[in-house]
Image 1: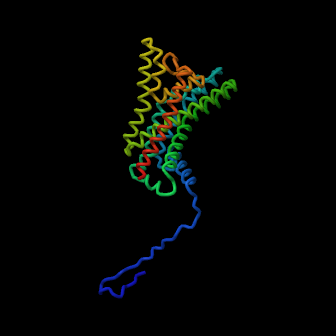
Image 2: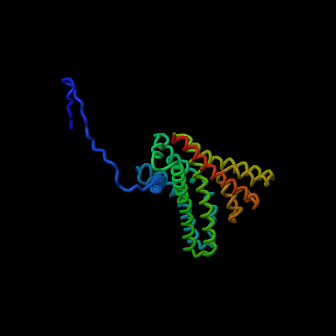
Length: 301
């Protein structure tokens, strides 16, 4: 609709356009709905669901790589009528730590780097969610994705053990211990991966930094532990395990879940040392959450 102003000079016109804005009169679902939506969207994105085929390849491939060794172990146990599984439930994640590290390195930056790079974080905080909602949703989503990745092969092992008619009570106990271990691992690895990824909007830098923190640190600590053990300094082996995320989890499950240590010579931490391990793990998880909150308070300004 065009209205000509009576005082305008010939050839000059003022135009008023009615573009039809209307107020939203539907239900207001609030913070809880927004938080759940962000969680589910981030969890789906961690496996490439709802994204391009290219985005699905790596997470699905890593998931298959995690489960294939468990399937092979189950097949061997059933075929040979073994009395026990080749690997304890609590040891499986330690053996497959490289795959877990690669998954965190690929999906941690994916969860947060795009929001930082395209500067969409302030839009999240405009209304209705707050900083804590965003951080908790992202943290919970990556931790859940990691738990799915690490728990799936344990389920394969457990079902295979029952099919092989192994002792039900022993297998159930081991399976429960394994689930507790990977749950703690998922919280720790997700926190470390998100903190590192939130530092830089460049995904490549985030991937390299996460690999260094999770995978390379394990190799370095394991090497130093082996040297200490060979030089008859076995007392230092448990303390060296405090400097790598996967050896921290190994120490906790050795001290409190009765797992066999993957340290050189199976020199795991004692109960007293295990308390130190547990305090360090819980402190790291809480510290990662706190750092994420501080980071996103600054970004959301």
